[in-house]
Image 1 (cartoon, rainbow, N blue to C red):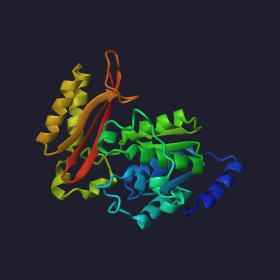
Image 2 (tube, rainbow, N blue to C red):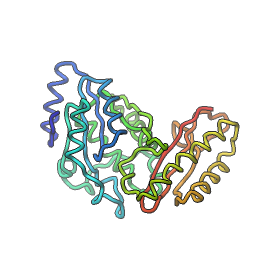
Image 3 (cartoon, helix red, strand yellow):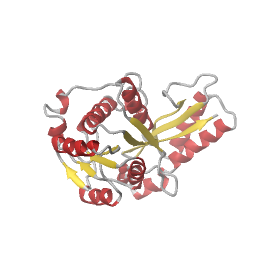
Length: 282
């Protein structure tokens, strides 16, 4: 695996691959990799001749009081894991490489309608930061396919909408969430949890599953289910941000006859914000 730090060098590598007719997959990450990330790499390896991964803690998607400076950075272990799992190039840019005029002065990409609800309402500007940096990566790498986890379901829809709206010739692959044995969705931020918080964190997934079961059994009062989910999270010791049932293709509230849904939740365990979701077809 080759580690590349500049846009010029990465484009040179990709030019050589393209001239050979090779198919390219891209997996963007912020590092501190876990088994969920490695599963994304495996999906990319399976679908392409060359795999590019990035590690970039993007300042533009962090709010003023969020964990940009303390976000865990584990480059040595991450590099070994990527090399051992079939990645051909690791793109490791400095902030100045992607934002030469500073993140606050860069051109921005906004996916209207999907960026200011749910997580976007709680984290203003977050999805503008995500869409902007991912669009930059797509313009640099120009992959045939890009791989994202479904745990960040709203992010996945934001990226899909951006690709469609900007007519980018990239297939976006969503990969099901990888979970711990007790059901907790794998996340780099799980490491922030204390031992006590970690022991109860799987309750988030259990509450989602209970709501999934109610819908499977015919419940259709989604507002009531959402309130019940919020209370169940409070009873489990969380401070809930939101718990909701939405249409899976656009995250709007379901209307009669909608059959493809997703149950989404975000909740705080101490100072750690956890997100998760379950999709359901009825």
